[in-house]
Amino acid sequence: MPRHRRRTSSDFESESETEIGTMKCLSCREDYESRDSGTCKECYEEASETEEELKREIDDLKAKVAFLRFWAPLDHHHHQRFSPCFTDVVLVAAADESGKPAANPVPVPAHKAVLASRSPVFRAMLENEMEESLSGTIKISDVSYDALRNFVNYLYTAEACLDELMACDLLVLAEKYQVKHLKTYCEKFMVSKLNWENSLLNYAFAHQHNAKNLLDAAMSLILDNMDKLSKREEYMELVERDPRLVVEIYEAYLSRQVNTAAPKDSSTKA
Amino acid sequence: MPRHRRRTSSDFESESETEIGTMKCLSCREDYESRDSGTCKECYEEASETEEELKREIDDLKAKVAFLRFWAPLDHHHHQRFSPCFTDVVLVAAADESGKPAANPVPVPAHKAVLASRSPVFRAMLENEMEESLSGTIKISDVSYDALRNFVNYLYTAEACLDELMACDLLVLAEKYQVKHLKTYCEKFMVSKLNWENSLLNYAFAHQHNAKNLLDAAMSLILDNMDKLSKREEYMELVERDPRLVVEIYEAYLSRQVNTAAPKDSSTKA
Image 1 (tube, rainbow over the protein chains, first blue to last red):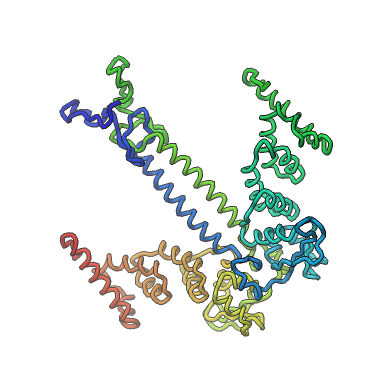
Image 2: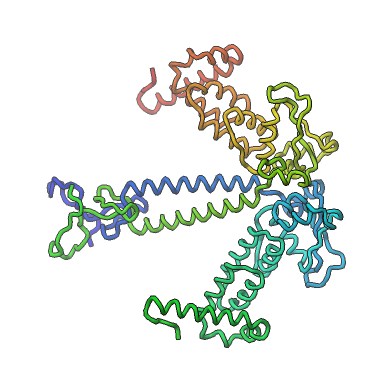
């Protein structure tokens, strides 16, 4: 195919440029032929403007997030601000790193106003002058100090440094204290780490903690690998521990087969 | 210009589609000719993906803002939450709506932690256990109750309902308490309301409160209308009140003339 093929201006004078074979892309500056054409000039210019506008909006929103973000009382980068930051409550992890009840738990300082603003559970607890509000201490059971610190930090900053274990721990806390934004955040992370190896464990975990997005993603992965399912160790364990969850997998499998068979021709997996 | 002009397949077999005169834009679905071509297909698809990604990022950031946004203690929509929201300080406007010192000022409740987090001036005031911290009352001079309420509300929500007067009031407060985000917000609003009629007042105001963006925009508008400048009433007043500001206008005018004259040919305005 000829690149840069141009006719002389004497050819087909009346049609001038309309039949030139190659054009220069305004974005990548490469020549292309009409079969590879994308948009007209007007739409290209409009799209460029839209992109600029979206980027400006993103900058504005990022500035807003930075403004609204709190320094958490236990943020390591701002330890010098630790002492006088007007905290009026502490949270205490009722289990240490290994899961045993902590002997001398390190309290995580916080503000009632922040807790109440981020979690309806904390709000009810604190506004109704329950024991926690009066004593100024909120005990959080079944959680490590590390997870609790990360949880509180998230309430101030909307950010957390996750690995797969921390994502589980924080999702559990997010579910318990109804912090939707954190739950979505953890689910997204866990979905991104999903694979066939961990899909059954994630499926059971998602079921237990009403994590719909994670559940759907894990279920979909399981259904794509039904032929290998019953050989997995986690499968046997799940049949033993919670057979209803296994039933749900088979029900979903059957329903998928029926649905894909009905409209098209039957192309079911073996 | 022929639209939909297609050659029969027998013409120039070897070049097949490369010389077809019109193409269909993948964005607006209209036909166009090569002279109006924008991008190649690949760049179009890439740009569409980028746009989707930017929109997702915007959604994420908006959710983050919603999560981080506080309900302000005096937010009218959430009045039921007014009483038990753990405020530990009140702000008091030292002037009423008409600018006179208020006899019985209505206090605006707030949290020391929020004030300190949003404004380095409040932080210094509160952390150093100055009078304000000990008494739990911060007096704000030269401000109406309405402006103070809007100011505090902005510290919690990063939002304000502005008109031109309120934008001025909040900009002054933002400058005084070093709340950069609010200052930018007010400046943007005021720049959007700039016109020749209010440019001199805005210029003087921006000068007084170090509002660089507003100053530049107002100055630029003034320089575009130098021939009408000396006839304006505000001009005479400014010469009277602060002649140095007028000198700066003339200096900028001269500098613009020299700069535009030097590189190109002299095309100065009359």
